[in-house]
Image (cartoon, rainbow, N blue to C red):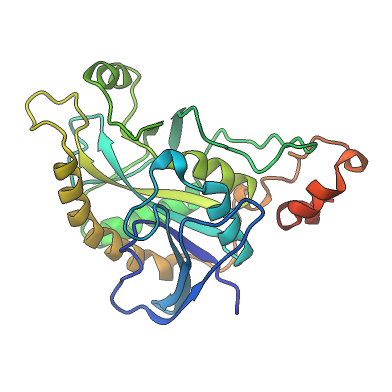
Length: 286
């Protein structure tokens, strides 16, 4: 099987895109267990793409239980260098309306129960994470979203909560006072692990609701979120189709060398079993 350089993490229906050909399904096995689902690989707009439904087919896995390390490792093992994350989110600002698209450039992590690194067990790595999204890939997503007629908001802070419950009104009001733009449950630890794997990562955040701070809007319900998510799927597919031909073959962003100066442990002190387990990520530096 040839290497696939573009990965899409999102809903289980995203790979059902009109025009996807040469489809194959790959069951990946990783040192971190099984991914959420088999990876569907196909050709779209002349580009080989790997689709991985993060919640599994039928949306079986809640955010806290996602095997994110296995998901990112599986995509890395297929040769993926860029990940487009498609995720539902809530808006924390009046001007970002339901059914809009947000392409954030910052993250605020409020999760508390998720493994967020590949490393440890004798191997200490401190990546730079000041800019958690790939600015190059984010710009391409923005241009594609505008091209297909989306109402798009570029930049802003994406607050990640643990879930699976939505926010209380008190939490929502406080989050707004912090100046965040959107809220969701999945970009962490995906963005952290993608950086550790030296994969470019950008989010196409599809706005489903106004969270619970907006007193004049109807209350946020599961039915509302699901209804808007379904409407957003068609737009997300159009953006993906539009962005693929714009992605250059070579990368010239810092994401590609995220581990270069990040491995702190003395080389001779790294346990052999850990080095073997993480060879896919670290061998080129060791």
